[in-house]
Length: 204
Length: 198
Image (cartoon, rainbow over all chains, first blue to last red; front, side, top):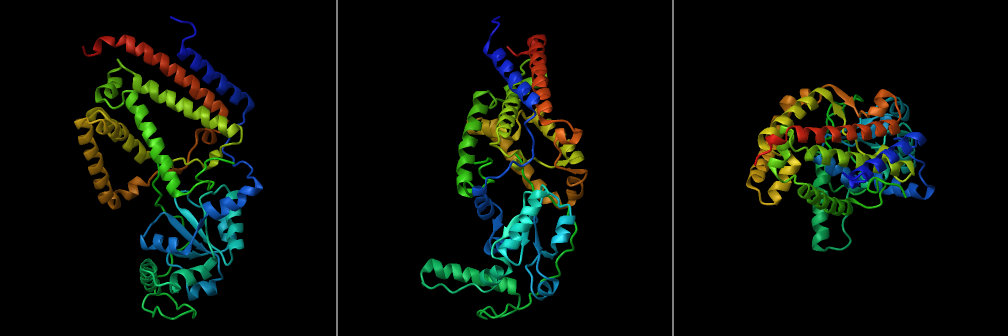
């Protein structure tokens, strides 16, 4: 039997690496410092969802997300995104969220949304998504989609689809109301701020 | 630049799928080359005369663990963004037992049955049909077993955090555990060599 067989060398290398890491203790699950240049990348590409994407999630009846709407209760009562929950920054900071469902933060502005995302990151919760454009994006992109400027076949098809989605979310109201204030929806009241049991299924 | 690249937005869903496809091919190729496309090879570990599966799995665990640990240590990988499956203790014990029973009877686990089927083995193909049927039945009856499937939830449990010890020490312990298992496997293969079919 060779003293320095390949298996023994590999075992020695593994022991050496593990011993080195044990001595230095440099491995942890704490998030490393993010380079300043990477912040826009993280905010714009990873932790965001737009109005049409969120509308499709709701239409698919997915149960792996929670929408938290930070607007005033009076505004929320007039009109809200179906399945959303009205809450405040204080409530968010005091709540321990389950990790199996992604949080979608709907702020009054993108800045407020990103502040909440940063605070959630500091709490160790990394799954939250910022709703791009705030509630006005929901009004303009889902409830009142713009007519296409060019009447190509694909543009008309997309517009027809958007109108159907708009009609669904507006309930019984007329869809051709231009830029007027969107009417109150006919959806059932949103669920209370309690942690659900359903978990997102991931893994091998 | 920090990994995981997908979670830090270096590329989108489509590029992610392309990488997943390439990595999947590599994973399948190595499983097949290690002999994991053969039910005889896979089930041999239960008869203790061929412990290749155990050795390959422990080698993969140690390699991945040390690689992830090293990349984290040099600040390249954010381990906090690597997905860890949440623990549902009781349903996962029951699920593990069911998988083990299926493994002993059928000769494959779901991944290796895919390897066997792709190399043209009929038993692998039949096993895959069973996997698809099982997924379908689980989906259909999920509403009636949901309370059990989501019971004993412990959230995301990591051994170092659960026991309050350092990651690096746990990694060193796993390396020594693997060495112990390799020695045990070698002893077992010699001890039960006569069980090996001619």
